[in-house]
Length: 157
Image 1 (spheres, one colour):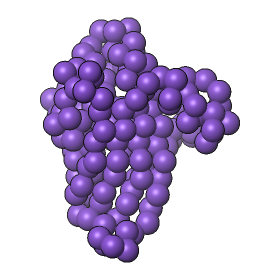
Image 2 (spheres, one colour):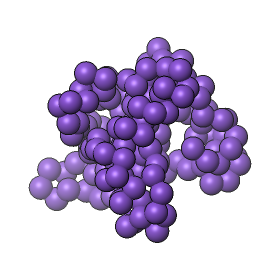
Image 3 (cartoon, one colour):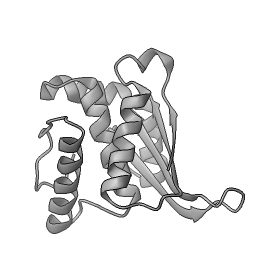
Image 4 (tube, helix red, strand yellow):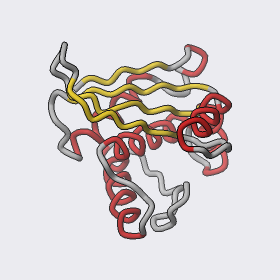
């Protein structure tokens, strides 16, 4: 499995690349993703992610994480390209502070959440939400990170 990470240097102390990679790999493993799976995680400003949200979802408001599913095979490498995950670091930092846990833990949670979206899980309907939250909490527990800051049933995050 290949995880391509793009984290600006000024944020790597609070969001170490190895920690984010472990989170992505744990989610891929738990969901039994193909061995040749590849994805990209890009960490940027809240304004950048808000612009992506406006451009691709028609929602002109900030958000923490967006996932863009590809679901194609790269003809050159044979890798199964799952897609891209965009995370707003400043937004994640604010959420971590409000929830009382570390920025690193929040970033891991957002990576896991993004990977689950790339693999087809969602939180629109109540039952889908329950399955997604249970999967993400199981993955976070496996990583040794106890986070319960997101509601188990609500469809919003």
